[in-house]
Structure formats: structure tokens, C-alpha cells
Length: 303
Image 1 (tube, rainbow, N blue to C red):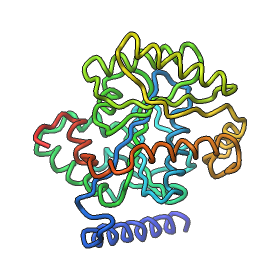
Image 2 (image 1 turned 90 degrees about the horizontal axis):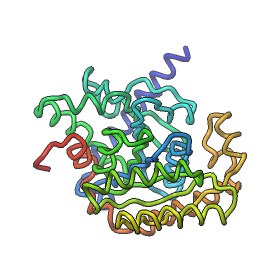
Image 3 (image 1 turned 180 degrees about the vertical axis):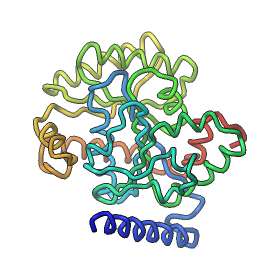
Image 4 (image 1 turned 135 degrees about the vertical axis):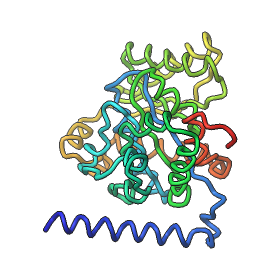
């Protein structure tokens, strides 16, 4: 019975989403000319809390009134579903191989946030013929009508796939901790990315600092290094201090924004979410949207 109820719920949600999409072109606030903003969240090494930042930032933005979709693009260790406590039925690979629609692969998270499990779908897209790729991108373009922001949670490190996501996004949030190894790896990522393109907008967020002094020291150290040796100025997005409530929330498989809304870490991430959107006011319309994102991601020209 539970399986039948789940299937029924999914069908109803898909119908609702389709109805929203059909109505959108006639609405002024979310017209078909408005593209969603694509934000890639990445890190130089694993274990810095990147995915936790992605999930809780998405929920915060949703609470602010934005329609948010998360694309779990960590090809090796996808775990958005674990933090949400939800098992997705389909992944991006099902759109490619099984002719599923974007509505089929969207999973419902808390606070109206939706997410897509990328799996090995993105890697598969790079091997498609141009006409196949065009068809897939047209399917994905529906996200521009149902989302204001798409947050792409990448894998950690300096792999070809991570670099692709960074270049394709409208902007990038680089997450690091104050640990020397994390800072060195973050610097290496910035060096690799900006070697080919210094126009990439990278916003720095320091996570799990023991205190404000340590957080500011890490920010200043990395910003000084990139500016001095790479000629790259990182934008300072802020910091999140270490909070035991984060560990408790992970064990509960619930975002800390929801489990502990009044905690220090929740308040700090709320400030970061507002700072992020205040700095970007008016830029959503300038975005190439999800269609442009996937074209850049797969090196498909003639956007």
C-alpha cells in the first residue's frame, strides 16, 4: 500500500508541476524570457561540508521566496538524498536512456525544494551525438520555468567534471575550512580554473571555523594568495562557525536549518543567503539559464 501511495503522490506532484509550467508564459512575474540562475557549489577537497552548505542554502533561499532546484552532480559520492532522507526513483541518466521527462526525475525535498540526482548522467551527456544532446537539453529547459535558482553540488577536487560545472555556471561558491590542507586545495582549484578564464566569479565561504578570528584569518590568507600570485580577487561571501547541531541534524537526516532554526549556524547561513541574493539583484534575467548551462557544460556551441 505504501508503494501505491508513493506512486500516486508522485503522479499528483508531476501533474501539478506540469500545470504550473503551462500557466507560466502568460504570467508577468515568471515569464518564459526569465532564466534561472545556476550556482555551482564546489570545494578543493572532500570533507569540508560542501553538500551540507548546498542543501541548507537551498532551503534558506526557498524560505526567502525563491523556487530552488538542487542538481546533485557529485558523480562518485552523491548524497543530497541522504541529507534529505529521501530515495530518488530516477536520475538524470533515466532522461537520457529511458526517455523520462524532467518531471519524472524531480524529487521533492523539504520546504518546496526539489532535487535531481545526476548520477553518471552528466558524463553520459558528453558522449551523445549533437542531435541527441539537443533533445535532452530541450527537456532540461523546463527547469527555467519552474525554478529561479538551480544549485549544482559538485564533487570535490580538481577533476575535469568539476571544472566543467564551474565554467558552465553563472557563479561559483567555493567552500573551504580553515585547515591548511583545505586552503591549499582551494587555492589549487582557483589556480586551475582561472588559468584559462579569469572572468569566473568565485565567492569564498569558510565553513566550520572554531571562532571568528580563525574564520577571518582563513579568508584573508586565501584571498591574499590568489590576489598576489594569481591576480584573482575572490569575493568574500562569509563564514560559518563550527556547531555541534550540524552533526546532530545529519544523524537525523534533516537539514540543520529545519532541525535547529535558531542555532548559530542557521543564523549565519541565513545571513549568507541574503548577502548572496542582495549582491545578485537583477542578474537572474542576464543568466543563460539551465539551457545555456547544459550547452556550456557539454561544449555545445551556438547557444
